[in-house]
Amino acid sequence: MSDKSKERFSTIKELNKDVYDILINDKLEFDRLTRLKKRVKQLLRKYKVGGLSAIFNNLFSKKVIDRINSPSDKKKILYITITPSFNLLRQSIYIRKSGDYETILLMESPWLLKLMEKHFDVVHIYDTYYELAHILKEVKPYLIHVQGSMLGSDFLCMLAKLLSSSKIVFEFYDVPSLTINREDSISAWGKKDTELGFFAEQYACENADGIILGYSNEAAEILKKQYNIKAPILEFHTYVCNEFLTNGNNAKYSQKEGKIHLVYGGYVYTANIPKNVNDSFQFVELIKEITRQGIYLDIYTSPHMSAIKFEQLFADYIVLSKENDLFRFMKGFLPHEAVNEFSRYDFGMLHLFDQGSSLNKSNKIRLPGKFFFYLEAGLPILISEEFEYGSKLVREHEIGIVVSQKDMYNLSKIIPTYDYEKLRNNVMAARKKLSMEANIDRLLDFYEDIRKS
Image 1 (cartoon, rainbow, N blue to C red):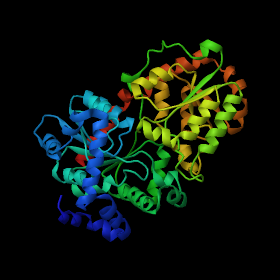
Image 2: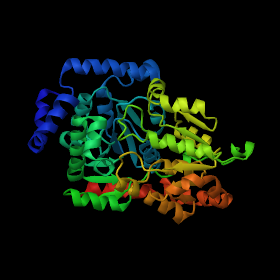
Image 3: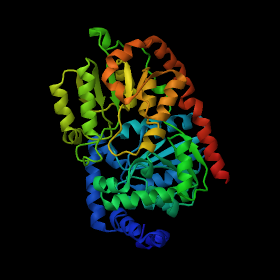
Image 4: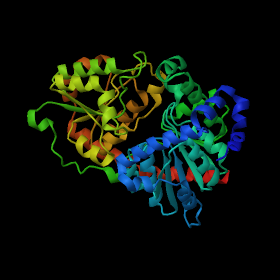
């Protein structure tokens, strides 16, 4: 990609010069020295996860460009992201099963390389956004699916839309304006990332050819009032993946001492996030309250990070786990490993308190991926009624226990009043209805409708 490619972003300059400057000067690495430094860093990261083969297989972008542009009797779906979430992996598994499509993944983070290589036809780790931009300018896939993440990779929608002639589907992992206010975002992630992230949200809503939301339909209505959205919107979740189902025969931890064991798996705010955004205080207090009642609680973070960063960013939780015999804090597992381990618990815990400065409207309408992880593990779900969409599904399918904030102090008395085996049987039935297999045709129909538009 030459410096002349800056002209492709002139429309951004007209819309918001500050965002244009951030995109050109801070993100796209037009400076050669900046690109070289990042490439060296990426080489080291790739070597850590896959040795020399990971380096050589991801050394030249021409290889993946030729692969995408090569003639094929299958339609090529190109996924682009920074750190791939597990919903993309699940989608790819069932898109490929249809027999009509190939899936190709471009990602920056190398930590899940081996897992992603099992479930995509092609995986390429790009070293710089400059390289990614060059690839997007050269390739002609059937369709491009961009996965955003709050104030992280949402801006990739701009690259895809401005550099490629293919139709663009944008999938929000989190919607910034529904999740956090600008002031708190600036204190947590800085002014530049906040400005770029919130602008990218609007750009994606008003320019993508299709939008995917892991929220209730209410989120779509909120966004339509905020922006001039003309593209179709699909509510589509992480969903249960049959490939990751546990057989349900693992012995429960509670069988040993007769006490309830809860598990929480997923994102936890790290110690470097400001206190007004960080939910650590509430999480720590919740841990203390649950264990005070004689209930065991284990937390597994996301596996999307190195062991070194895990030790650095979660030192407070690690210390707490050493001091409290009923609490453990651990690095997360990959999906097939997580469900087997989680199946040993009694309940999956899904939001029992308001999280820092997260906006109430996001809490009410979002459905986190851990909801489906718990179903895969055969676990009934324990959730607070304040998280309305998740609570609605738990009640509708009778797959868990919905409690209020004040019930936190009586969990040891409330939980035993439920018929646990009935809840588990309902989980087994619900995960068939809420599976990726049962829903993938909606996504493929969405793709085809967008291609025809």
